[in-house]
Image 1 (cartoon, rainbow, N blue to C red):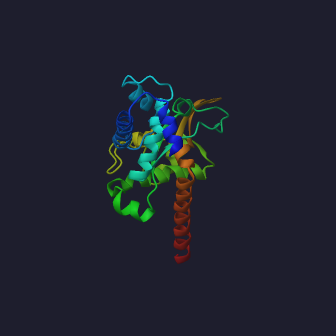
Image 2 (tube, helix red, strand yellow):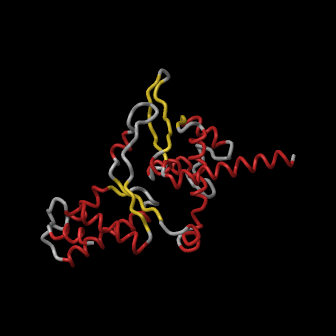
Image 3 (cartoon, rainbow, N blue to C red):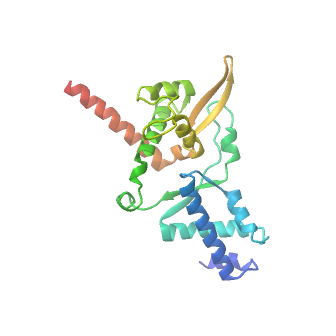
Length: 234
């Protein structure tokens, strides 16, 4: 706490002003997360939110953002996690999308699973969660990288057609897949080859997060076990 106070002392603003800035960042993060269905929030946008109030101290945005991160976890039970910089892709190139959005944040609930399921989880969006895990699992089982053609070939086996613009629960399926790119569950990359440009999909930062990655593997294990049990019964 003393370290935080000493850091705050370098800024020529009152405690009330600091608290107001922290509150505005928290409100912005919560609102944008809900509005954009969990898409990452750019650090640049948070910085502009602070400096736009005519505060020009160089280190103030970083201080306010860190204070907001503490409050989000203490009060709301959310970790405001900074996404890691883009890793080198399997095509030995950096994804332009990942590089451009390197400094951004997502909210991750730190509530116990039971409490989250009972108090926070939006069951009306369970179909989106299911689609997310299906796509991640297909990419994972393909070795972490798959062409767009092969991805849709696997999805078609589940009745998910690339041309379907009015799926009963997912709506436009191409847009549903694109949403996973924006939310950073998968990377989408255009790769030049002898046969022209080919779009590849890879697991992105959120899919590589330890908690989600473990849940994905658990999901795959259940599907495999279900298939094994079906064969045994037959």
